[in-house]
Amino acid sequence: MLTVALALPPTNPQTLSSKQPAVDPYSVHTERGHLFSTGPTFYRPESSIGRDLAILSAVLHKRSTLRPLRVLDALCGCGIRSLRYLLEADADYVVANDANDGGFDVIKRNLARVGEGRWEARNEDANKVMMEMGCWGRKEFFEIVDVDSFGSDIGGLLRGVFGCVRFGGLVYLTSTDGYSSGGHRPHHSLAAFGAYVRPMPYSNEVGLRMLIGGAIREASLLGYRVTPLFSYYSYHGPVFRVMLRVEKGRDLDNRHYEFISYCHSCGHSQSHPWEELGRMCCICDKAKDRGTLVVSGPLYTGSLHSGSYVMEMIELAEELGWIGNGKGADLEKLLRLMIDESNVRLPFGFIKVDEVAKRAKINSPPLRTMMNAIQQLELGFIKVSFVNLLLQEGYAVSRSHIIANAIKTDCPMDSCIRIAKELQQ
Ligand SMILES: C[S@@+](CC[C@H](N)C(=O)[O-])C[C@H]1O[C@@H](n2cnc3c(N)ncnc32)[C@H](O)[C@@H]1O
Ligand SMILES: [Zn+2]
Image (cartoon, rainbow, N blue to C red; front, top):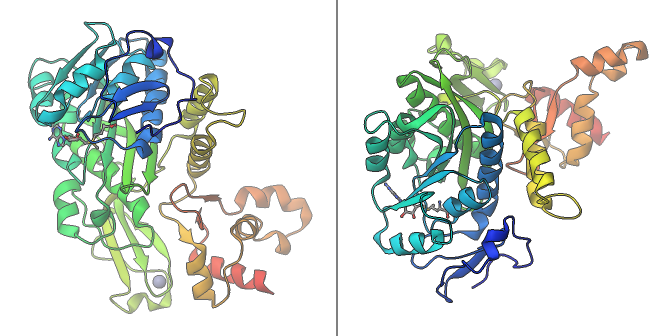
């Protein structure tokens, strides 16, 4: 079955050359013009945006570091990601590994079109490969370590990941554990990511923060610190992906590694530093009423993306012809939303417009009207000559790439409710 339009232009002429492998006609796919087979391996066409993001990062990384690009695709499935790292990001060397016995020949066949000496296929447990290669083994480090794992397996792979990525390198981590992010198995998230996660209204964002928090903790153990370049939630799965830059220096005194709370009484969310353990309460009067506050953590509470980095990704996507001129609308929309979300003034989480309406006991106002009103909140009370100042001091607000009918804002829930009511009048 062909799952992606063949009309897409190949990024690299090699991909449609006579070196095409002999493929199984019953499991042939194309992605960005690359023809490949999947055989009995796990392959999801819906994850192609996740692979696009990986390639954009890999190209930017090679261009900015000018170092040979060595990539470990630790859980490579059929090897499409490895193939794309080789052909589109011009990776100098890729280790394509997957523990699934049945897929080993598929990986080798898919990579066969790339010249020898640029890749090796392995059929082992990812931890064994990472331990063998990294700081505990041959000391062969990678510029990019990509771990596209199921469930919360990534938690058990993080030690190996940080043991084989080089300083200044990137790690691309994936979890698909929606139960843990939804707060439905807090002891499991505690084991995998070191975070006790309870049900919160923005659980899919919590899933990204749980994954980054787990990486912060594990990286700190080895003396590294990590910075999120982008974070991507997709409802297929669900899938939580984060691209992190790894540098020297511990991170646990990072003020963005803390606890978060949500108050069921008033709907307010806030973050709590470790010093507040045992003293957490809500700003509302009902704070004394124990049981209204739900607390999760520790989690990463900083910005999910680097706006300037995502801007570079957009420019590269334009250069590659992936977006613009009516192409790649979904990818472009996602990247632009990430830029909006990267405003450092925006706190963790989001507020669903329906929750505001429910608390205000009104019908849901249109999202755009609500956002404009929040940004201009105090204009009516202060003279026009203060407009510029007001705009600077007005609330920050953006949409969320995670959910359509919600806003990210530093405006507290009670003010959102008041605005929503005013909008109804
Ligand atoms: C989500 S799929 C990978 C998809 C692939 N990265 C892609 O982009 O198409 C996860 C893969 O991890 C492999 N896997 C699971 N646990 C593993 C482990 N401990 N070591 C190596 N491979 C593993 C599975 O066989 C499966 O192919
Ligand atoms: Zn409250």
